[in-house]
Amino acid sequence: MFVQDPRWCQFVADHAPRYQETVFLPALVAAPWGIAERITAAVTTATTSGAKGLRLRGFRGSEFDFKLTENLSRTAPRDDQSLTEWLVDSADGRPACVAINDVSSWDLGLAALARSVVRSLTPDRDLVSGADIYTFVADVEWTPFGIHKDDEPSLIFHLGPGHKELWVWPADGIDPRQLFENPSLGKVSFDFDRLLPGASHYVLRPGDFVCIPRGRYHLFRNTGPSVFLGVTLFPFDIRKSFADLLIDHFGARLDAAGEPASFDDLQRLVLETLHAAEALSELPATMALAAAKQRTAGYLRAPKVAALRTGDAPVDAAYGWAYPGVVECVVGADRTHLVARGRDIAFGGAVNLDELLALTGEFTLNDLDAVLAVELDISRRRQVVNALWRFGALDLFSALPTTRAACAASA
Ligand SMILES: [Fe+2]
Image 1 (cartoon, rainbow, N blue to C red):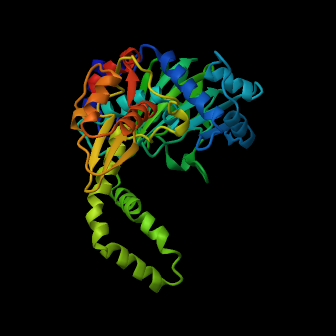
Image 2 (image 1 turned 45 degrees about the vertical axis):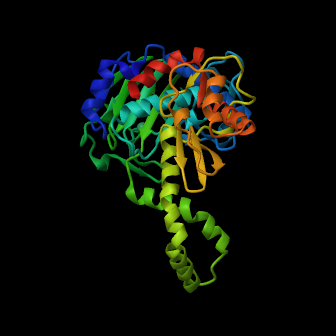
Image 3 (image 1 turned 90 degrees about the vertical axis):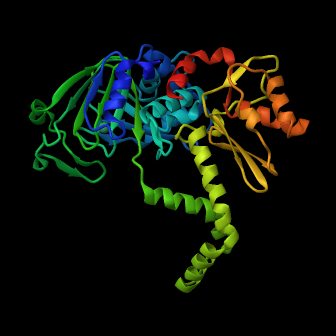
């Protein structure tokens, strides 16, 4: 897989963690259609599951299109239909494009791939502030956002089938007075003819990768219907992490306290909450659980319920972990949490699951059952094994080769 490509490793070594240079790596992804197929599977799951939580936006020209957004959100790609064909169908054949954020949370395979990419982009880091894996499907000439910049680096894998043209302006390449302050897009311009001569020009073919630094103006033009997969790494924000952890820890207590009627009530509630001795003593366990959820999901949002497997794990099959670190165990004083791909399987009491976590390579359900038997009764063991299967922590060993190499590289 491409995360092992020496050019990718050099790119990461030279530019992590901020990715502040424009870098173009042609023909990096050997089988871009394989990734497009996984995105199609994700879109199929999302659109057939009622689309709750689907972050999809349809555009025409440079405008958000509510009707197209609803159409696309309710319509699954038909058998063998590509993403660009799905878009053309739902858009009545008129030029349009669609952006889908967090697309990896709708497919276990795409999530495993996304996790490998995010892991490879953040070497030697345990604390990552999260990532968004998004796709952009276009059957339109110019990108709807015009010449624009983004708040984070844009890491883009072009998947085709059409080519994409890209213009990137130097850091101070556009006089701000030549840009228009758009209320929803910020400073942008659609005055392409006047500004294009000042930009570097790239042609993206299927399998090409490009990194556009944050704050750098850029513009895309499609020469045919096409799809790309984008990665956004969110910069670490200590205030946000602090607030998230406290809300995670104290949220239930605050909800139970009812609605304060005055600032005095509010002050009392805040001070009482922060002073509760048992609340503070439990804080490290909350933080350990939050960290385990982040790491086991690869710093991505945990897969949606609609993306999980249904039914029990097939017996007599050979299994492996979906990727290294897909399962962690957090042992508290009176509760144990087995965390798999960001989801919690909780037990009463302190349960030692070291042997489970030590399993590597190929194993069977009997092997799993044997290591769990030391601590758990038969019905609990079945529950755990089936939860690990449904959550996507386990894969059939025969299904692993596509992601194994990537996992080994990013372990
Ligand atoms: Fe952009």
